[in-house]
Amino acid sequence: MSQPVLEVKQLRKSYGSEVVLEDISFTVPVHTATVFIGSSGSGKSTLLRCINLLDQIDDGSIVLDGEDITAVGADVDKVRRKLGIVFQSFNLFPHMKVIDNITLAPMKVQGISRELARENAYKLLDRFGLHDKAENYPDRLSGGQQQRVAIIRSIAVAPRLLLLDEITSALDPVLVNEVLSTVRDLKIEGMTMVLATHEMGFAKQVADEVCFLHHGKILEWGTPSQILEAPKQPETKEFLKRVHEAGRL
Amino acid sequence: MGRPSESDSGAAPYNFGGDWVPSQLEIARRAARKTRNFRNSIIAVASSIVVIGGLALIAVTSPGWKSLSDTFFAWAYGVEVLPKIILGFGTNITLTLIASTCVAILGLSIALIRTSRSPALAPFRILATLYVDVFRGIPMLLVILLVGFGIPALRIQGLTNNVLILGTIAVIITYTAYVAEVIRSGILTIHPSQRAAARSLGLSHFQSLRYVVLPQAFRRVTPPLLNDLVALIKDTGLVSILGVTDAVRAAQIASSRSFNYTPYVMAAIIFLLVTIPLTRFTDRTLRRSIERQNATGVA
Ligand SMILES: Nc1ncnc2c1ncn2[C@@H]1O[C@H](COP(=O)(O)OP(=O)(O)OP(=O)(O)O)[C@@H](O)[C@H]1O
Ligand SMILES: [Mg+2]
Image 1 (spheres, rainbow over the protein chains, first blue to last red):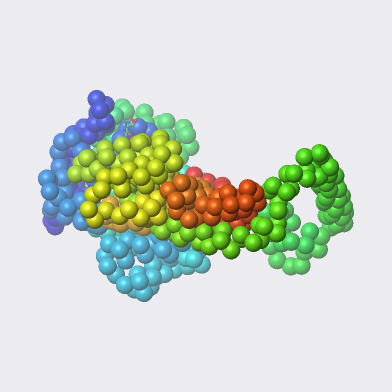
Image 2: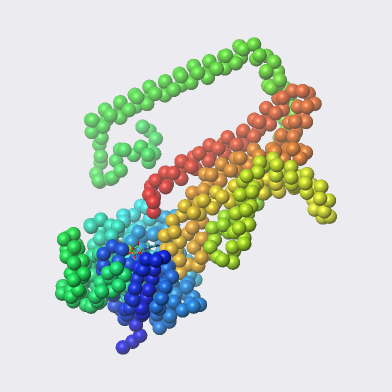
């Protein structure tokens, strides 16, 4: 078997005295999607932030493409170039047009020429049906369109691994689908991904592996059908029952 | 309503296609609005004439008016000394241009140092904080006196005794402290998630500042910075205390020669000719930036 894209080993993270993540270990093979589910505050966002080195971990290690990115002296900027992250709140740059949001990193980080960067950006915008929004400022776009632009922005640098943090929870139910279908397309094209989501139906569709996070620990993991349809742990059952009652299955 | 502006687009924000003809109801509404607007402007004009005219009448008919106008509004003498005052005002403008350029550069540097988190910059952070605290807390006149008279008193070889240069330096020292704080507050209002987004795309710390944080921060602080520019133009008049022949000093010389205060009024008018348009412009910029922020929400 080829080397996994991401390998997290015994990761631990705390804020002050509050332990947020404990003994987290998992592997993400190439072209697969690992989905984290769990109630609010279980540590999903923190995990993704740690992988992206936006937060410092307390113990354990994170290996990306065979390289320990948590080692002393690891080049943070270089690591981040291999990772894309999309946030719940989009975080587009409001002072830049859509096209400039997308071309900023390719031009400034990868040193690609402006013409080529714009050409690539337009290709991506075309593919996701956003061509006519290129010259708009983000605040003129709907939430769903903004989130799709954020996704395009993060894949424009051709990352090895894409981290998606509850990218639909700030959206109207109607807009959720257009964003999710964008992610499904990326999955089909072979993008390796780690996601946190509250959308169980979506998790079932894209996940190769589902991990249930509970109070900062991976309590249960397996294929989508194992976890979502036949969970073994009482906490997982309880969580799924609550999600079901909230009408999200 | 002849003026097609965005704010009164209560008419039709969406184009559903086809030719839209306003309904009878809407036509009646518009007519009513027009009448009301017309009536309002008549009232505004009439009340302005009554109030301002009344005040003017009271002033002119008061017993002191004659001596007042002779002392402050002797226009013939005012016109005579005008060239000298305008020449002096050239100094104020030059000083403003030089000082504002230096203040912009230094203020930005200090704001960046104060908002940085690098441990290597720790001593500079402390010094910058001290500097800002001290020079925001001293009257500028004192700084001008200290620099303008104090430095020549040191009699250090090679150091300038030119009061114009020393005065300019004093102005720069004081305004850098103000402007640094304005810029710093602008940087702090940019939500950390913006920097996180930039960093996560692989942009370096410096690139995130340059392309993401600072452009947004500057947009927010443009109105207060313009306010400071207006204040700077006025405050350049303070260097006259060192003997620099600016507009204020020129007016002072002319006035003491004739015991008439019209030259001061002339100098005041010249300052106003520059500061009022700038103030109006600042107001407009502020209004626009508020509109933009409301449109953007908290993004
Ligand atoms: N910067 C921080 N400082 C202190 N505590 C934090 C910080 N960020 C997160 N936490 C805490 O860490 C825990 C996990 O938070 P996290 O945001 O990772 O949860 P989550 O699973 O993403 O929740 P949600 O589904 O609501 O997004 C929470 O208890 C939270 O209070
Ligand atoms: Mg979260």
